[in-house]
Image (cartoon, rainbow, N blue to C red; front, side, top):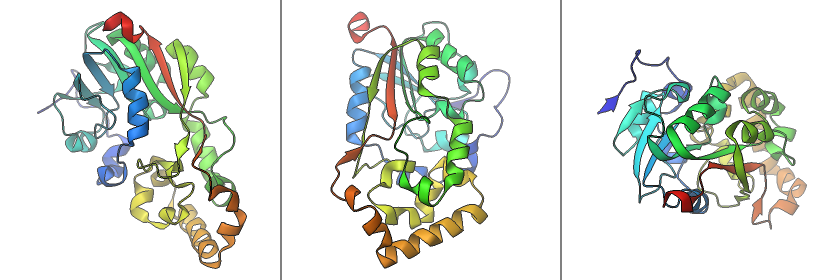
Amino acid sequence: MTAAPSGGTPATATYDRIGIGYRRVRRPDARLAALIHQALTGARTVVNVGAGTGSYEPTGARVTAVDPSRVMLDQHPGRPKVLASAEALPFEDGAFDAAMAVMTVHHWPDLHRGLGELRRVAHRQVVFTWDPQHKPELWLIEEYLPEVRELERTRFTPLAHVAEALGAHTVLPFAIPHDFTDGFQTAFWRRPEQYLDPVVRQASSTFAQLPPSVVEPAIARLRTDLASGAWQRRHADLLDREAVDFGYRLLIAGRDASDTA
């Protein structure tokens, strides 16, 4: 059973609209999972804030999933599940060994309050996010959808500011492998044909929030370039690369694993 926080159900979240079928495209990648799980080593109790469908949760801990979207929680396989926002976590101070937040802080209406809540309810904080100031950016943005750049800059806070607000003592880079299984926006940097699939695009909150009048002409241009071989000629250098650093980072704050083991 999904518990609702005191004060009523939160306002309908973005993922109530776009979350249907999310798990089919957003499949956890074992390499990112290993990085996150290492950061959570020794934590016996974990709260996953913005949990979505439960990706990257450690199997050896008691995990409480928190999300403002009932659609997403309904796809989450675990228990307990709590319907709540990051800014108002219904838990006591220090209730968990660790708090995790994976590709979610850019959705929080009040980033600083949400990060403060992570610090309040858990001794350790592990946050995976993206830096909008990082270069290079995905070719899709530069060549086809510059509108994504403006949208992302309104949603994502520069990494340095997030790290400072969280009090992070460790910042770990994560380059996106060419065969990355978690279909967020940059996952298909070497598999451009995937962007032609509307199901794949729907699983990305950025694509899902842009109007069809913007997305569809851009995808039509990409389809033409793939058919003619123009994209392959323009990006021949990418076809042999194993991974690219697009600015994804894992932030770790609070106690080290040895302090809570």
